[in-house]
Each structure stands twice: as C-alpha cells, then as structure tokens.
Length: 89
Image (cartoon, rainbow, N blue to C red; front, side, top):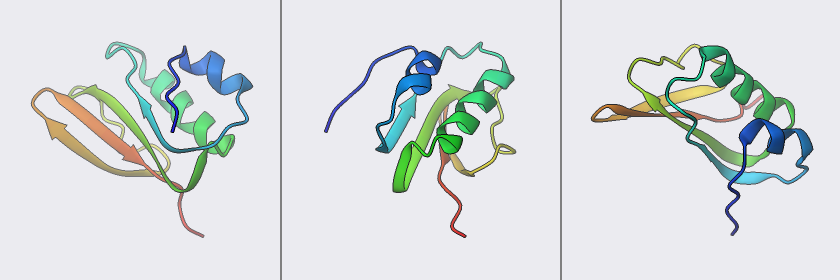
C-alpha cells in the first residue's frame, strides 16, 4: 500500500499507476468544473482498479451527484464525501 501526496492534475497527467482507492480532498472553493475535470480524468485514464472507488471530499454547497460514475454521497456535519465507481457494462 502506498500514499501519494501531490497536486492532483499534475500527477494525473503523468501517472500510469492504478489504484483501489483514490481519495481527493481539494480546496472546497475550487470551481465545479475542476471537480468535473478530476472525475473525468480519473475514469478516462482508467486509474481505478476493478471495483475501485474515487472518493472526493467537499462542502455541502457542492453537488457532485450529476457527474458521471457517481454512486452516493455521505454527509458528516458540514463535510460531504462523494463516491464514484466504474459503471459495469
């Protein structure tokens, strides 16, 4: 098991590694387009292993439920965790 701490978009552009879990905790005030870019890039680059999860932490004011591969959101106080997974075909 390894943990990577890096600026997400720079890292995603160069990695060829795949993961069981990707946890992203971007600043809460980033534009919604950046959340969308994050989700699309991870799935386009096939960075999740089979049955892998992308988990994005964000504020209650941000709704990621309409994004591709969205599974569910869990709310803890003022923090939200949105879960994404590859769609089975």
